Length: 251
Length: 149
Image (tube, rainbow over all chains, first blue to last red):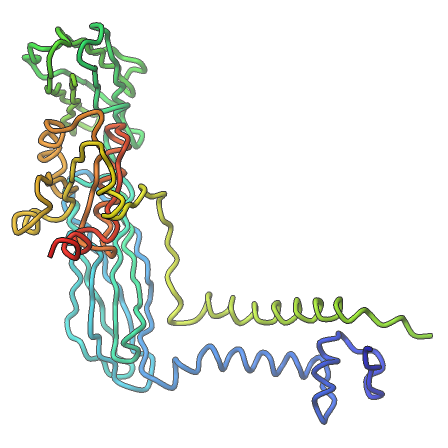
């Protein structure tokens, strides 16, 4: 059986308030309840910030886009000790050997600012790259703060595909790959590097001038294993150039 | 006249929903404002991960790819493994293609569960070369060391 509403609350705002009120000696109106709730939320949120040493980060995610000539991408994560105690950074660890993360010092007094410098060596990477850096402090040794370095490395050329495969004994059929410019760049010229390997014949044709080219390849023989590559040089409208390489196998 | 009281089940459900809603408010505020909130990240769809016990049951030829750094590879690696990482992709890729066979399964590994190089190399082999039968070794080199001390 449901208990009838108490006399001090003839029209309760909700059954939740009804349950709450039944256990309280004083009536609780809706505005009081929401004021208390707001105070509780704010206290719960910011109590750790002001009562203990803590690092507040300007940003925990940095997004960068590299230029074709760049070999590294660097990002600095700024922080401030917004607590009342000194904080010691006990560990800074990157997810990849290609990324270094360095600190000027490890101990930060209340109100003191600092930064973690990250350097991501691009190598031969292309496309979207996300490297994480884990930071541990003496304030909470078991909890990690994760910083993210998101780097976009534009791929200048796209291949569809980059590897052409014939099976041993296959007919001497043509296979095609399409080489196209990425990032709205215009191709001024594209030329196959000569001499071509003697195991294949190849022909380069435009599909969409300045943007997309078709490379048609035919092996001379498929009776035995073959492992060769075709190289080309692409010059873009802005006078930069890029080497391309297509792999051809008979297996 | 007073309205008929709601059934106890409906009342419990209604109150539970309200409590969940109230809990959502501090959760959203904490996720938005808290100085120690986790950073949001996207993740790409990954290549299938397999463990060593699964791999030992496979009968197909295996090609092991070591996606760690050259220095780590030179120090020690899975016997017969090929070094292929994105630091020197263009230089190392031809060697992988020399040994690749259509019926072989490719297993890529890096240091441990914490590294992402094996997934990156496996995804690039799929995307750039259009190869299939590519897997990532769960826990990477650390799991190999554990099974082969």
